[in-house]
Length: 380
Image (cartoon, rainbow, N blue to C red; front, side, top):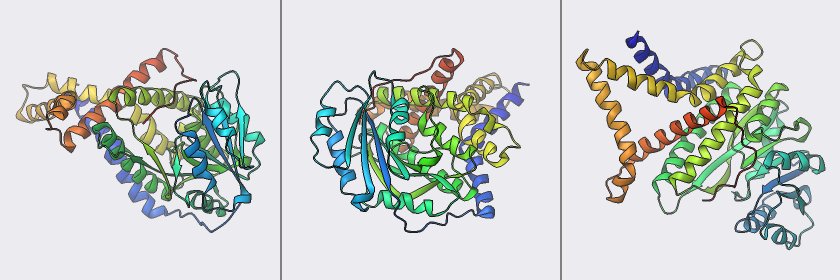
């Protein structure tokens, strides 16, 4: 029984991070569902939910004003979530008729802010931007080109973490995003991607569905689009730059929050996990998301079972030494970084452990019925 736990745990760890991407790559090559994109210029509303973003909001809005897209077809709506700093004044001071400010009172979070703004948006296409997201000049044009394909309902762009100081947490974020973006490219050829980036997303306004305040819009809204029979795809040429977090504590808290809201999203949209309705996407959702968030269980199972099998053979001893070394590297990473002895393997081990411990923390909160609707935006 202990051996079974050990090998099943190892299998799922491998499957979640390598097996599923490999199977998706093979199946995607067979299905090869291309997006039939074309240069098109529908009207666009860019929505920016903001809370106390005085340091970045002006640069973000002005970045959108100079995008390579017909100026008369773009509007920018900033939804201030009862900001208590100069966010509102800064937006109001931008003298451009395409910029509008909506103030949400009382503070109710990003999801409620978007629910409020979408009915007031004039664009055929809604683009979601974070308050600190800087787009490449052709980002919106690249996004909307995908809507020439009538089967496409939602498009996610490519986020690149700006990490000028080379902090280890920033490097971990960058490596993780490269992995996710590669997987999104693979999943697009299957039909739809599972995860999107809320800082550079676009969707048909007609498909938008109001969400509960506690639901994660970056996750639930794309699932709602798939539920309506449309595709959610990845556009790697639509680029966004954001600063990564430098502090591991900030990154950890952000990952706990995102994981908790994603678990509730999976619970709310659990019908999509049932094979038969959309069996291919159900497999993707289980593999890419649910099993990923539960991977900490398999990691704990592999280590615990390995410890009990330690004296059984040299193979189990070797596996235990390997697992222990990886976890020890991750735990000692802050000290190794201080003395300049932390390479990429140490950085990867640290970030991998951080992700999975955060998922475990979020899972405990989920089991206890805790939800998070409002939070302070992360700072790079």
